[in-house]
Image 1: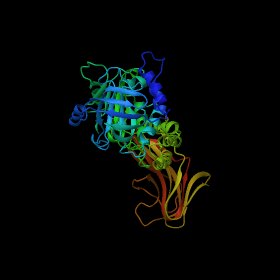
Image 2: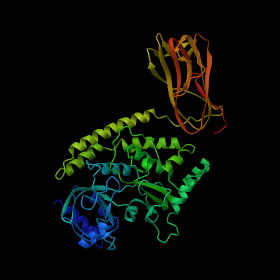
Image 3: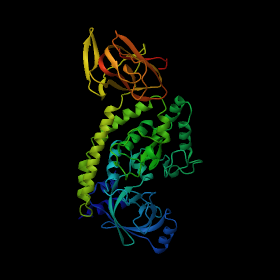
Image 4: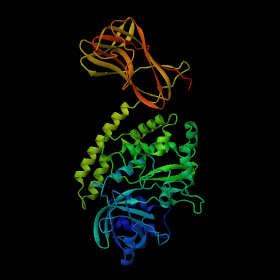
Length: 516
C-alpha cells in the first residue's frame, strides 16, 4: 500500500493520454510515502564516472513499487562542504531525459539526491523552500528518499527538484528566458553556466553582462534607472530578505553562492533570483538581517530610497510569510513521516527552538529598525517626537513634566549619572541641523570634557554642552549624511547633579540643503 500512490502517479506521468492539467509532481511531493530508489551503473560507465564525476553517464534507476527507468543520466554533485566521492555517500544528479528523450520522473526531467551531510535533521531544505515559495519566490521542492547505489545502501537522502526547463514551465508563464547557475562563490559579473534558454544566441552571457554594467554605472541616479530595466528590484529585495531571515550565510546575498538567475520574458527579460543549497540554516538567531556582500545589493543600496525599500520589504516578508509559517506543525509532519526509517526527534526539537529564537531576535531587530526617512515639507522642518528614555550609569529620573507652561522631556539626578532621551531615525543623504530649547537647573558637570547638557548622535562626539542654571536656550548640532543612514539622536545630561528640561514643541530637524 505504501507505494500504490507512486504507481498511480507514475502511470499518469508515462501515459500517452493524460488528464488535462494533471501534474504528477504535485502529488509526488505531497505524498507521505518515502520512495526507495535503486541505482545501477555498469562497470564501464562507473569507470567513466570515476574519471570525470561531473559528466553524465547512463544508469538504470528502479523505484520500488513504481518501475524501472533506463538510460538515466547520472553525475556527482556538491561543493566544498557537501561533496563526497563515489565510494562514500555521494550527492547525485539524475537527468531522466539526458539519454532518452521524453523520459520523465513524475513529470520532472531532473532531480537531485542530496546526502544531507551538513544537515543531520534533514529539515532545512524542506522548511526553507516552503517559506520561499509561500512568498512567491520559485524554489525547487524537496522530499526524502532511501537510496541504494549498485546494491550499496546509502541510506536517507533529500530528493530535490531540479531547476531546468521543466521547472521554469511550472513556475513562470514563459519558460523561454535564459536560466543560469550562479557557480561556486562567484558573483554575477563572471561567466555563468547556461542552463536553459533559446539556442543559438550569439552571446548567451549578454543579459548578465548588461546587468553588471548597469549596476556599475557611477552616477547612482542613472544606475537605478538602468538597473530597474534589467532586474526585478522588488523581487530581489524579497529574495534578499528571505535569505537573511533564514540565516542563509552561504547564499547569494551574503556569500555570492548557491543561487540561480532567470531572465523572465514576462517581466521584459528582467532578472529574478532563485534560491539553492539551503542545508545550513537558522544556525545563528542573531544573524544580521542587513548584512549583504553581493554586487546587486551593494550597488543598489547606494541608490536613493533603496535602503528603505528593502526595509519595507523586510517587514512585509516577515509579518506576511515568515512569522505565519507554522514551522512546528511542518516539523512534526516530517518527523512522523521519517520515524519508520530515521528518528530525527532530537534534531526536530532543536530546530523548533532555533526557529523560535530566530523569530524573537528578528522581531527585536524590526522594532529597533527606523522607519523610512521623514518627508520634509516646504519649510524643510520636522518636529521630532517619540523619544525613549535611556540610562547609561548612575541614578536619575526620566520624566515628562511641565515648566513655564511648556511640556518637556525632563532629566533629573542627585548623584553622578549619565541619562538621556533617544530617538532612532533614518536620513537620506543631505545636510541637517537638529535643535531644541533647553533649560538647565543647577547642573554640575561630571569631571570630563564636554559634560553637562547637550545633544549628539549616538556614538558621536560631544560639543557645546551647557551647565549651571540657564534660561531657555537653543542647543543645536549640524550633521552631514553622505549615504542613507540609520542613527540615534541623543538629548542627554552628563552630570553629578541637577536637572534639565527640553521643550517638546521645539525639538526639530531642519534640512539645510535644497535636495528633495
